[in-house]
Length: 268
Image (tube, rainbow, N blue to C red; front, side):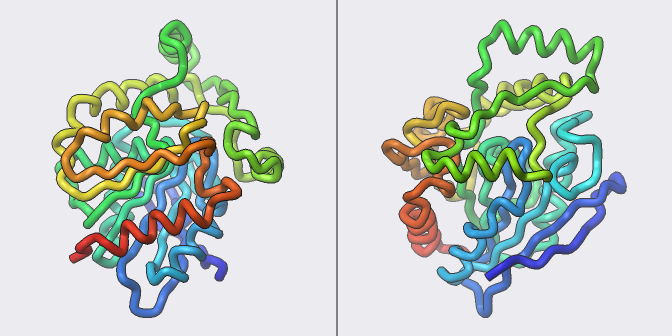
């Protein structure tokens, strides 16, 4: 089934595109938080799969991404993402599962260690909890953000890093709603959030499933390794898979694993 779209207005007036896949008498409601530069429309097959497994699915384009408003891939504060997510959480029926991929996984994890209203569970796909960017480049980006914060720089994503299926990378770069650049101040804000929550992971109080491709170059598996030692967290590495496990040839196996895990949770 295909999704239907709508709009909502964030607390600061930014328009956010919303997306929904409905399900009769759902077992739960999954809220997808997408990754850097992409948009919720790239999750049509994920939403359809989970609906077939009995879950209603909701998603939205992050501010500055896809069809949502706001300066392209730019932030004044990471809390803007958390405020938007809290608003979406309040609009989705319980029981709720937050499904965050890559930077969306960082947003979801930051939300999980906050005092904001919590969902029943989390699924974190290749969560970007650590930066693969060398320290020197991080310092250069931080310096540039002070002098030219709104200059756009390439994100340097390569198609074959996303999936072993060449069609995935081709579609990514042909998609007019995909952004391949971010402002100079964007990366330092994200890096700072990674550092801020690093010691807070043990405070996560909800069940969490972490899935990660063992051959992920964009967000190496080491980034999600600290979650493996947190109570209530299950972590699964998929051998041979790259950054977007849900877009690999084995996507049905991956999404089936996620749905099986959700089925075992007490989503009250």
